[in-house]
Figure 1 (cartoon, rainbow, N blue to C red):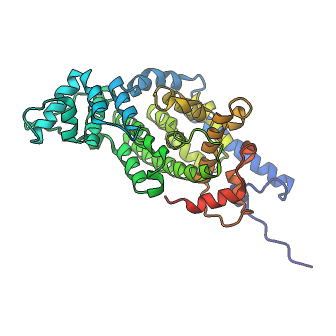
Figure 2 (cartoon, rainbow, N blue to C red):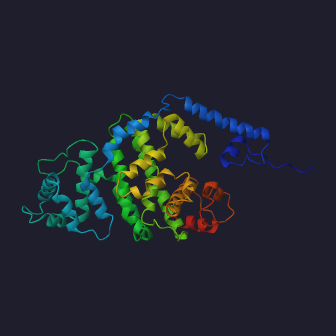
Figure 3 (cartoon, rainbow, N blue to C red):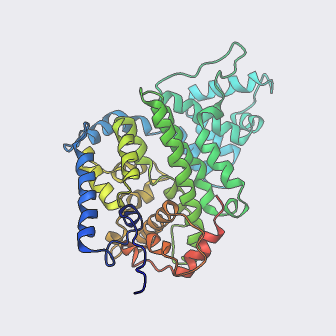
Length: 389
């Protein structure tokens, strides 16, 4: 009698998702029962918020602080274009006497000049990027931290502006280090999208569990940047994609809602860890998240993006990132963007340098929810081969 093929253990079957046809009925029931028990255990833990109080707290405690002042929005908008000029930056300063005074103080402290003939000349002397960083750093402190910048006796900022813009500058540097990415229009919004992580880093410093939240921010940014780089390669095979300037920023911010939830509820980080350890499918995780916390992170992410001029055009893509098919018949262009985010997220979460079009990993990348997305297996294999992260 021929030897029977070895049977995979239950844990392996759960991981690969091959319990549908080849597994005995009793084992399939056992897997489903185990997953139901895992979800019930997550929902039974302290901190469940089925009434939606977390969303109400988000709107009252966080949302007012993440709405950047007009000056910051103007500066970010100016620098999202490659033809930004010193004149545009100086216009942002002219309507803000507080920033003007701080700007001149910095100019004098570095020994540039004691008399500045104009704001435009001051911007040139300090440098375009340094001017941008200074304006944003001061306004982030005042808006998010509700604090005034501290100065040394010599008239210098005690905390350099760059220290408040860790993720904005990191994103900009990573894109600049990639020659192919640096030339593309989607890179123009990289700094601005990264700056939103800095906003939440400042908020995280105000809570007792800040170390865990700051670690989560680091993780989310790294994974989201990887998602954006994958999307950049997949986009090459999508000539019909119209939102080419927006997709990277959308990918970078697709999980920003998780950070907001973690700031409001320390148990959310433990919830994420438990879902990862139990290898729960994404749909199950989203169900458990909504039942326990009263809202999904994609909803908060959409609200966050909607409140910013540069990101509002893709706020609905953030909302429907796990259900792009809901947009396929009504908003074709928005569907393409949303589906690209969904696909790139799947690829980043199950990253592998596949070399064959029949590799099982492709089924995890392009699942049933993406059946309407016109991207061939060959294009996906070629895209992932080009990814450098």
